[in-house]
Image (tube, rainbow, N blue to C red; front, side):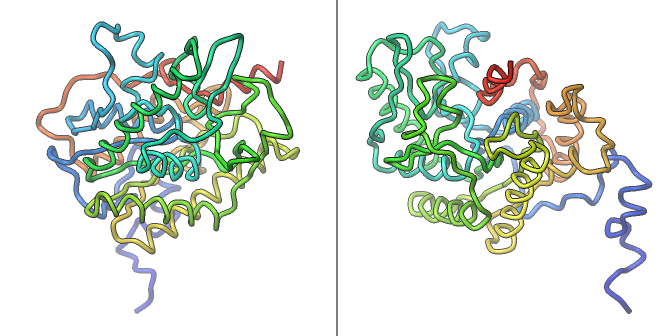
Length: 341
């Protein structure tokens, strides 16, 4: 008797990885709880989470849309204005602190101070700058839009019984006075001020504490909610640590992955799905990254979701929706690329 049984091939690297491919991902993931057609699923997270939301919808699951597009807006324009990407119009949520602050703000129902950015006499919501590409006419209008948005967010959090969140980054930009975390580098949308916009690279303990606090607050308004956590495999576009972007990316993803494990071990209502491992490990031999070695290919996303649906079977009401291509994913982080030229 020993703790490495021969009849469990999934525990042996030589058998589970070296002699197989990610397309044969049996035994990789065992669900902690079931999803069904009645599950009210809400999604949020980094750019990679957009793929998960679309695949869930296309396979018949009930993914909430608590902030639908106004009547008459074309299908092409909807994602340009932040509609239909996630369960609410909050754009990408790259950081766990950002998620925590969103829920806190939604519970109070009051927009945070100092969240309006101005550029060329147009005004933007600093916490979701991409949802109004051309901005709004006044700061008052931005705050009115955000207050309505917060009502939708609160309604979503009250209604969902499975919240799927993809953790994306540890590196963030923070308002020095308020501690508010921005979803993107401020200089991409407004005048960068090093006295106001402070760089923050979250530690494992901070990320863990933020998710635990988010979970505790959400439980006060929705006691039965459960969670599926994933980690985005997409590397950093750039690092502000003044080190090489490769070790900076390794730290970021390792920290998030460590937090995911801690959450899984500590809370029975939190499940972890290994999308990160399928794409980024030696198993895939780099085959699931585009030539930029950063964007995940359509085949890679399909392989990830195939592993997910081995456990969470598609429902009988599956709708024929194509998954989003690389060009369709909305990602504010790519705006950093402009600073490299």
